[in-house]
Length: 366
Image (cartoon, helix red, strand yellow):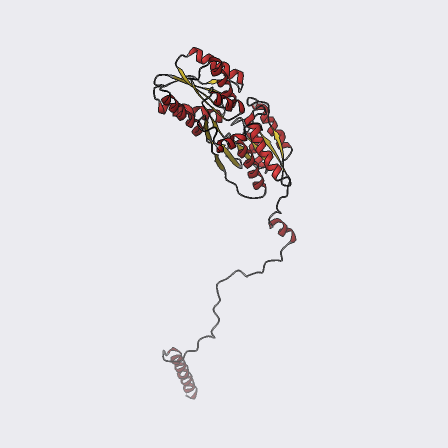
């Protein structure tokens, strides 16, 4: 009996304990609070001490120091125009002897395209600091120009646009627009002289076929002339291989074969001289004539009445600024990618103006 009573008493104590643990009003002791574990983060590690070699790789290169070797490649050595451009490049060198060393290179004539390409390739082989080039061909020099740029040699192009965008800068006349000015002045001259151009003939004598510059000049003149006189007869363009005597012969033959020829445009100074010689020989100042670029023979022809006018560029400034752009590129400066060089139309009406005389002084022998 006592044993049974002890068992009942033990069961009663267990019941009390269970009830106490299940009572919602009881104080429940939670497990000890633990600090919330933050999301895993990458440990901030101080950067390692800078390595001397890394500093050398990341530091900007020291400023280049001259004198810089820059060949200036012109289109032809037999042309006064390209000699003026060369003189502009040399003037920059004279003013900055500690900064640049200029070498003037170029083939004898603008028709010597393959020779100019060879000159460019040979210049690249010398690893110059930069190259300035007035490319005769828009296509033939492109591989060499791209090669030079790939070698880190800046190439500044002048006068003629090459068929690549892989060059440092391009400084040139807007040849089409400049020739259009000549067409406009020719039309005005016919009006002043009482000549009706309707149904009459006009022609272009071009120095070289297939170059961007000559094509732009020819098309610029013809397109503007046809806008001014829709029914004018434009004769087939004749090419003279940049030869004055050849241009003269073409002009003589064309005047003889076309009684209604009232205007001739020559697309460079050699063509202008040849045209003026033909007009003088035939004594035909009634035929209105214009040409591109300036030299002494053309200026004299304007004074004498054998040439009505010339479109004058700024080759001196082009050569000077071309070298300046090349030097600034070497020194790490940013230069304008494309620059339009202004032109001036010179006629008997303005040829003696002080500003025109100053401009022509760069083109004429002193």
